[in-house]
Every structure is written in C-alpha cells, then in structure tokens.
Image 1 (cartoon, rainbow, N blue to C red):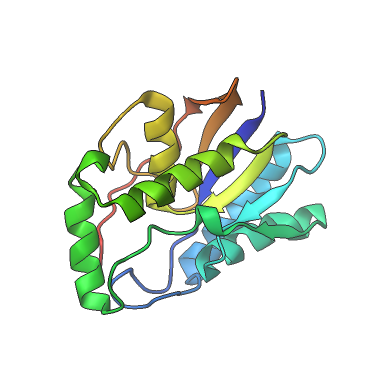
Image 2: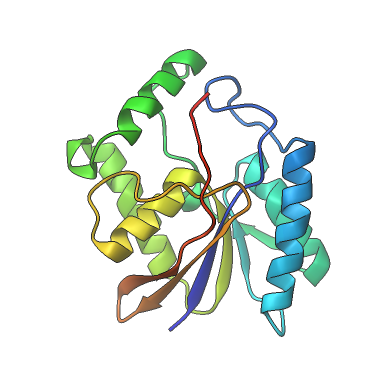
Amino acid sequence: MPTILLVRHGQAAAGFGSHRDPGLDDVGRAQAEATAEELAARFEEPVPIYSSPLKRAQETAARLARRWESEVILEPRVAEIPSPTEDLRERARWLRGVMAGKWTDLPAELLRWRQEMIDCVLGFESDSVVFCHFIAINVVVGAATGAEELIVFRPDNASVTEARTESGSLRSTAMGTEATTRVN
C-alpha cells in the first residue's frame, strides 16, 4: 500500500492569468526549502520524486532532490489542468468558472485529463513524492473521497497531502494545510 505525498508547488512569481509558466518567487523558494526539510525528515531513505513539467513544480521538487542527491522524474500527467485558451485573462476567467463546478459539468477532454491523473497516481508502486498543482491535488482527493466537486479543499502553497493506493483505489489519509487561494 504505497503512500503518495502530493506537494503543491511553492508560491509562484506570477498567477495563472498573468504568465503561462512562472517559476517561484522568494516566498515560494523559502516554502520549497521548508517543505524539502519536512519531507526529508519523514523518510529513512529517499523515495522516487515526481514533478509536473511546469517550472514552479520543478523548482519546488529540486530542493528535495538536492537534499537526497537524487533525480526528479518529470511526469506530464500531474501537470496543471489544461486550459482551452492561450489568452491569459480568458484563461483565468475560465478557471474561476470551472473551479465552481463539478466534474460532471466538464467536457470529455478534461474528464480524460482527470482520469489520466488518477491512473498515474494509482500506478505508483512504491512510496513517492509528487510535486504538482492545486487542481491536480483536488483530483486525487476527490477520487479518494468520491466527491464530484472540482474543489474538495484548498491546498496551500508547498503543503503536503497524503494519499494511499490500495487494491486499485485511492484513499486520502491526510489533507495538507489549507489557504485562501484565488485565481489571478
């Protein structure tokens, strides 16, 4: 029964509606360092580290990889929810609307993305740390709890949410710290 730790990236230097792929700001780098210290203390030996290919997740993951002298495995299935538009302002407006709904309200391509995320996490055969995003963490928690709402809780930047895989299903065992998150 592998334990999967889902880590939301540290605070980004720009919001969803103002930059396609921002890295971390100074606060985010400090959050990433603190989370790396916390995670390193949880394990007797290193476990696989996976990251979304987006910069903010990779930069957060890099702190733990440096401590463990290990590599980060890029996993595109744990990336941010795909937006139907490249226009940054429209993208933020779209996300605000989506976040207020249920999975059953969304188009087939987003349901496929959601299922790929769930299948990815279910496929981990050993304890793992996954650096990802707000919606991605909600996908896993929602699948574990049977929730249809897109937003089950609001994971803070650099928070750690714990899930377990067991007999082909997900179980949420500990939610990360929550924060007020807004799409900007």
